[in-house]
Length: 415
Image 1 (spheres, one colour):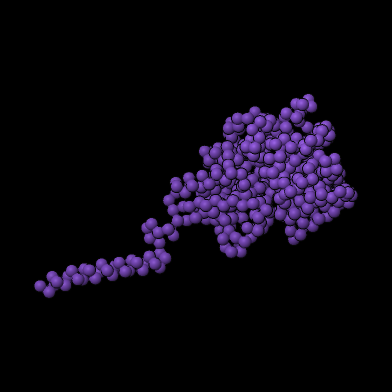
Image 2 (cartoon, rainbow, N blue to C red):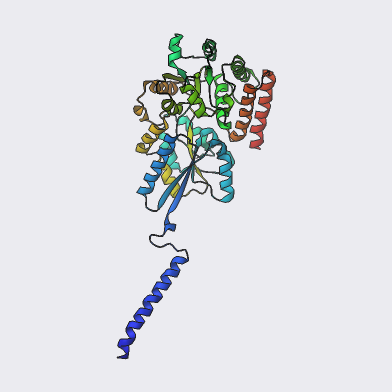
């Protein structure tokens, strides 16, 4: 009789003990089924400001998270001006992102900072095999390893107001001299010849670099004819009033709005800027051509995808997912850039963009990339602002000074 009475009590005690032990096991931080700590977070940092770009990446991140239990992809968007600081702070605090999307020039700067992980060989080779511009891979290679992957093709081009060109019975300019001649025929009324966004350091530097390149210049002959010609062009545009004096305070979005409102006849901007143009100018008619006067071929710029140090296997898998054909087609539609991979050309519907894509494919060249890009961009943007803001400058002296500072920026970083 005693055993029959004792047994229920013993069973109850055992069950209570098991419950207490299980609870302590959970509280000790050991993940159990359904525990939120089991979720692995992957962070992607992207230098995108257009809503279409942001929405597309966030949708793909949610989609990938839904397809993979225990994985949560989070996308953070950042101004390009803050990229270097954000990455450095993340490294110092141990909270750097897993992946980053930024311009190929900025990616070279991150390579120089030593914050990138080498890309898995299988993924790098697979991406390279499909590229329409395989030379883009050369700029992300060091010591036999690839440290990022080309992600978009978004070169600087010239947008021209088609209605105005029809009125004066001429086509788009093929040289800077032709552009100056057309600008000289503008009768004022609040309309400028050329616009661009130069408020941000990175944008001003890339634009100035693009102009220097059209004259056959590079970072080592700035004090010679190519550098002086580039400075002379900007000085002439300023003195004649062909560039609005407030242009140095304009963002890319501001410049696109002015062009859409027909306040400028020509606009130099990345090809993806047509997203803003189509939103702001319902009746706007424009044509797209390469930047005038490229004597060494056309430079196909764009963004790269990099993996930060410490990014795990799951981050690499998500990176590979971004290059799947179905995902790429959606990204291309949202980014409004040029095709980067074989087969993507078929997705282009606008004849203007088809023609532009063909021109780049036939006349492309490769720009050198530099680990010291962040230092270089500071120098380039400073002189770009100076030539547009100062009234009287000695162009030869300015070119020589620019060359000296550029050499210091490059050499000091390599030591």
